[in-house]
Amino acid sequence: MNSIVNPCCHPGHDVRRDPQRSSCSTDGDASISFTRVAGGRGWASARNLVGALLGAALCASPAVVHGQPLPAPATPTPSPGEAPADATAPPSEAPAAAEPAKGAAPAPDAGGAEPPAAAIAPSQQPQQKEEPSTPPAPPESGFFFGGVGRAVAATDGEGGPARDADIVWRGSRLDESTFVQLDLERQDYWESTGATTRVAVRLAIDAPTLHYNNARPWNINTSLRNAFVEERDLGVKGLSVWIGSRLYRGDNSELLDFWPLDWLNTLGGGVRYDLPSKRTYFAAHAGINRPLTPYYLQTVDRAPALNQPGTATVNLLDRQRLITSFKASHTVPVGEKGGVKGVLYGELHQMPSGTRETAETGVHESLPRDSGYVIGAQVSPSTGVNNGHLHLFLRYAGDLAAHGEFGSPSQPAPDGTASGAHELMFTMSANYETGPLGLMASGYVRSFRNASEPFDFADLDEGILVVRPHYFLRDWGGIAVEASYQAQRRGRVPPPADPAAPGAHAAASHHSASLVRFGLVPFLNAAGKGDFKRPQFRFIWLVTRRDEGAKALYPQDDVFSQRTWEHFIGLNVEWNIKASPAF
Image 1 (cartoon, rainbow, N blue to C red):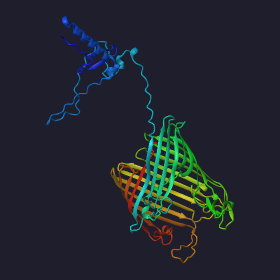
Image 2 (image 1 turned 135 degrees about the vertical axis):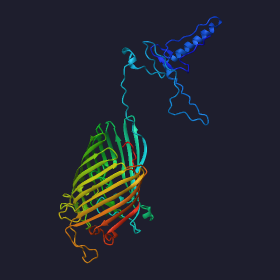
Image 3 (image 1 turned 120 degrees about the vertical axis):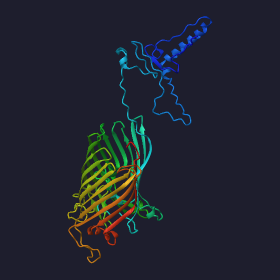
């Protein structure tokens, strides 16, 4: 007797399905053959025939065929002492498929794939459907922790504490003190609206640390830099809105550790819209602040209400500054990855009038309304590779805004306002990396004049240039050197109260000062090669040379007024961990 074999389910054959016939074939054969038997074996043959037909029907069902994976080729285990088989050698081949019959379409594979379109008649070719583009993944939801900071342990080379020796407004960050900023953020993507929200809180802690401030009760210098909620894409794609307390700023000058164009911290809100190209956006914000200076706040003791005993504290002068800002940014692509970004920026500052008590009790003076403005621009070409960029900033501030967001006019104009004060500043910041070499540079020139007419000591022109090349000996570390030059020129120096006093300087029309500095900085980068990779461990040795004008800027008996040469030797670590990944 010839046994009946189901060719579709036989594990030793290349199983293919012919869609034109809805039947099974082996090696391209579209027929099922069986042998007729006679005599008493007819019933058994009939049962075998029924089984074969059921097996063929099961194999013909696409769902069943698709659900049957092909058996994986067995991997022989080498005997002890036998060399293993070549991992790149192909597995044992299945039996070769037979030539299809003349005029028959090639059969698809066991996975149910359709035959090539060229082999199917045009009338039978399926319609090609456009697959929709994959939408971007929604922003990640959850809690995120990050922050920036610096820890410094240093000496002046004589056993005393090391100090910041800069004489300009913003100097090298290598000799800055310890500080920590802690970021805690909660981000949520709301599927029902397609919007994303972020709750951001930043706590800043400045020196001194416990090791220099361990008297009880313990004290700590803290401030709340961020406490706001921001949402994106709510109702309008590309639109974001925020409300709260926010450190609001743009690009920075890395080596000098400040933001030359837009650097605000207010309690308020803002809005931003990004065009679909993601190369252009517009932003506006409005917020308030009130520093604790007599220009903003004055408290006095007064009799309580209804003739109650004791005294009550009253805010006789209590006014706050309103600051609004506007920004437009556009990036022009250059090449495959580079581009040139242009920014236009402006601020308006406004302060209400108020009343303040003079040194004579009961005598009051009126403080008029005050205002100011800022206009600025930025041009930033970038390579798009290895953080290569050049930032050029130009900023002009007039009237009240010339004193900064927290500043107070110490020498106002005759009408009591800051009208006439102005500040002009040009800043440059750059970075370039190639192979093991990296070069960072930054500098600015700044001119400030207050609202009073004479060219006095508060009026100054100053500037700094810092250059820091890096050489990476390995991906995880190398050595950097830093060189800088700082200079300033101040207005008229008043005559000393006692010309015979030690250290007294004669009156002059202006005062000039300068210093030069050189630093050697071996470093370790756990995050790998890159000028901006953090955290970075450093050993720092800075040598500063002051001229006589720079020494004269310090009070009598201050060691800086006596030393021409200054050393800063210590350990330093900086870190910068971004909290929210989508913002």
